[in-house]
Length: 169
Image 1 (spheres, rainbow, N blue to C red):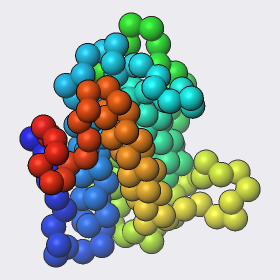
Image 2 (image 1 turned 60 degrees about the horizontal axis):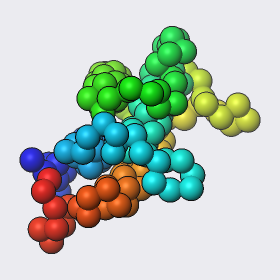
Image 3 (image 1 turned 60 degrees about the vertical axis):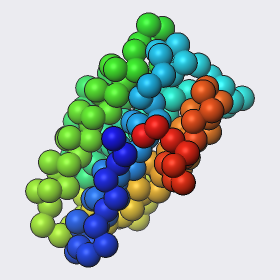
Image 4 (image 1 turned 180 degrees about the horizontal axis):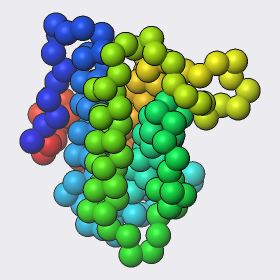
């Protein structure tokens, strides 16, 4: 099923959150339908694979929303970006969805996009970021890596994009 396109008429927080959810669904869709070996295969010189992208996005969600914005201390194993031998796409997607669910709870509970977070992942930053900044940053990073996932998926089986009917998702 294709990701749901965000509504054209909504307030700013709803719109930003909807775009983040849309991008999450898109990157998961690009990982769905390939076997675990294909999902873990490094197809570019940087060593990125579909699973590596999802693990990175998981850490971004946990780092920026749970740790930095909400101030929740996280076990180090949740912030591991390395794809381990035998790790399955199902496991990596489940971890990403769990991180997204944690983020969604924080986002939903915040009354204003202007509310600053508790700490920042950027030690030299002059202030902690607002929820608006965190959401915008997650949208930017997730969109960039969804594009990378699109290229990786095209190299695996020729499927690319989610426009002009050139896709299964």
